[in-house]
Image 1 (cartoon, rainbow, N blue to C red):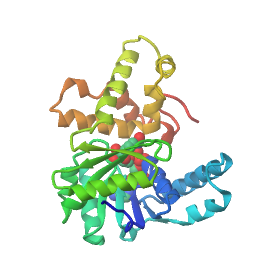
Image 2: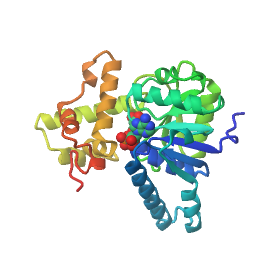
Image 3: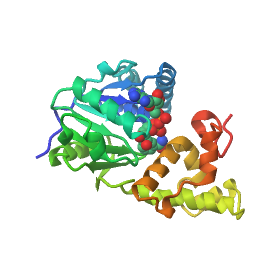
Length: 286
Ligand code: NAI
């Protein structure tokens, strides 16, 4: 019988699009939560965003007003990596292997041998991330979807050395957070991001071919049943993050043309049009 009763404290590294949402989910699920980022402005933004989201949850009757302050007070915001001592650490920093491995190496030093170190990576090798730590058997992927407080799915990814019990505990933890978890093998893009590459890449090719504009493509696919059209979704994800994921799959699959980054997304990133988070992407948000 797998239990997660010993899990009381969750540290989330990176307070950007995903980290802020994951921290909110953790705190709403009753865990003492530590949210760490190197950028004070991002931490401030995360603080405001979480407060706003909790207010909305109260307004919608999904959270008791009396609970709101308690949830918020469970979250400690910090710029100090040494504060990331927890039973489970969930990393959600930039999608670059070297940056992630450097952080995991630090996290392994700070934490006990019992701590589970999880990565929210969309596309990088969990085995490679784990290799940077002293206990690779306690490292796994825990891949949430955007927006983390809303999206139910979580992919639990076992690296080559991940102990089955570690993956199972993360699976149960996801369930405790109200999520639907699936187990996935450590392969580039796992399940959803591998399939979704084609949703984005083909849509950009359609726009490039002049078949229809972004808005028309989005409207059509939304009316066909997709929750969000590809361009609106790329803007929500962040064009920088989405391009990094595309490049990572492209490299991992030996330059397979089906994963080749598209000129449009490269240009968006070069122009700083990262999507919602920067105020402009395929659409304007200002
Ligand atoms: P983001 O760019 O919004 O936020 C990343 C944050 O990490 C930034 O605030 C940055 O200051 C911080 N950071 C960078 N290096 C750091 C370090 N060494 N220590 C602490 N903080 C550091 O990125 P986003 O979108 O939240 O993505 C984070 C991770 O989650 C990536 O691995 C991405 O692939 C994955 N992911 C992203 C999704 C999305 O829709 N954006 C969905 C699911 C997973």
